[in-house]
Length: 489
Image (cartoon, rainbow, N blue to C red; front, side, top):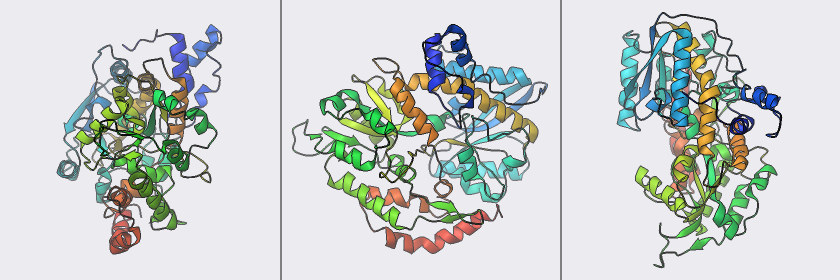
């Protein structure tokens, strides 16, 4: 079992530093780590004290089946291994199973990008249309599951009792973005550990930052001065031909290491470049074609390709991404754009690292924004779910227990460095989570003819010609938008 007897100091740090999926009203009585024992106890019970307001139900040993993706079983299944994260997931499951007298099971299907995701969606659609009643809950691939929402095979979360998007294990901002005309067919929250692992951030090598005299980067964030211009300024002239071959390769040191897929894609959200925005009628409109989009693309291309201080591989495979993580681990980069979950890998590096949010675009931008890698789970309720009320209750309970047990364990793992638990980075993760946003148009990019991926495609191909690319396909984008929105109308 997850050890509830872990040190008061560690629990205090976890609870005090953690804000998940909404305002942490439960932490209002938190004081300093040096508080009295009874105060520390109040902090430990802070998350547990948040009631999910669910009724007492006995489902007589019923099976609750989740359709999940191969490689993401860890979101729902874990053994008691002694690993703090595995144990927290195991204990969450036991808590919910015992409370409601159910048996949690998962049905796992391959659903990677491309043909696998298409096959996953086709299988799910066929099962639901046949009325199989096979699944109580679907944990869909965020990049591709929106493509079948228009088929009318999912229930509206807002019509299900007991699911409360105002609770801290959900995000009201995300719920608002995904709700159209009172209908929410997909939602995510603390139940998706992939959401947390995939949150975009910037790592920095503390030793190299000191060597290059970059100053207090945490204070830079807290003052609101952490911008793209500041990142460019800090990385200017940081390049060393470490392998001595006279060519800029993966064997050299750079100011910034970045990867040309979702690391770049996520800069849209960070820099307030929107694919869609709700109009006066509450329905999304495609708004990507504007001067800000063109300006941001131009500035990023200049920084990545022209400055000489940024390394982005031309190969966008998983192997290349792993190589870039290794480059950072080996001291070949001062900054790295990556996922929060990569901290688990980077803990093996010789130098300590820190965590920062993506910067603002400029000083006129009021807030830091982040998003997550698009492989997170979006949850859907099939229209043939055997007992929709049970689905609502168990999903709410699972998400609540994730907030109480799993997310604090994730914080603990992500923030452990060779030196100690990094409380400064804990504050940065709070900022990252508080600024988490999704873009409805980006999530539906496949269904909208690819408009949401136009940003990253142009940048990584060093192509500034946004206007002509957009104009060529604009009619298709609008037509497909109307088709997708029909289910919401």
